[in-house]
Length: 349
Image (cartoon, rainbow, N blue to C red):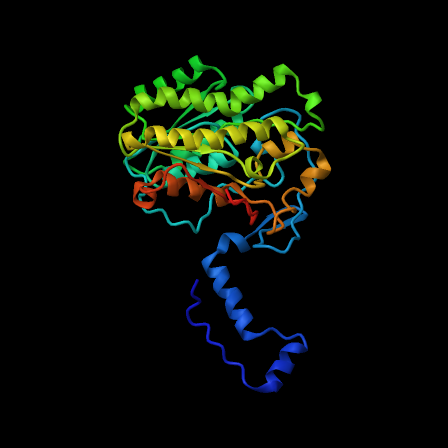
């Protein structure tokens, strides 16, 4: 990274002593100003009554209010603070103009951020959500997408569905194709997770439920969508940092995320000859509705502090990874790979 205009100009011991007395170095001041101008989302402060949440590059200081939601997959509108899914400083450049994208679990969290960034990049978007549990989030997302879509894109659609079953996934694909004629980008993103302290707590019913949502749906959506995808299309699967480092409290969830990594690699090899790229994104601790719906209040309050950057990420910080992988101009020679927006966790994967 080049910091233009930041010239080192410190003369003599007296100036060094001046800084040692606690005064700010002009170099540090200029560097902070440069970083703030180039990476405003990192320094932005979002305020709520009686609370200020400071987005920092690193160094700790972040803490969420203790909170708990009683049902999966969680509600974004009930979170405090609500996750950041847009960045007013992001400059779209028609990377996905004319494309048709399907995003599962697109009503909230990372899915909502991906839907938003796709529409401002020119895509026509369809997303799925869980009926009754996520109606408000889905409607809020749908209205937001309609407001921000580009002029040549078609109106977005929201599809309520339980993705854990093959026939339901086929219905989603059929509805999208009937509306838009094809699928260019498939983002498999829907997920659920539950804490446990021992494998003995995970019964057959729960194991099947988690695997149906988190990995069965990826197979089902992909096998039906492929009939309507051509050379140059892209499939992007959401896995997790937990697939690489393990997580003793999310054992069944972690197992599905490991399966997704293997799915990415195998499917990429299978579809390379058809010119369809398959990649993944493995987020670290991101502030989404899954968090208050999964963890105890005190765990939520300290969520994300364990990574090197000492804070949770926001969905808006993950979404550009999906644009990069979806855009042939950016990633035409990349398949079978996983991006790692995880706050600095080294995974060597």
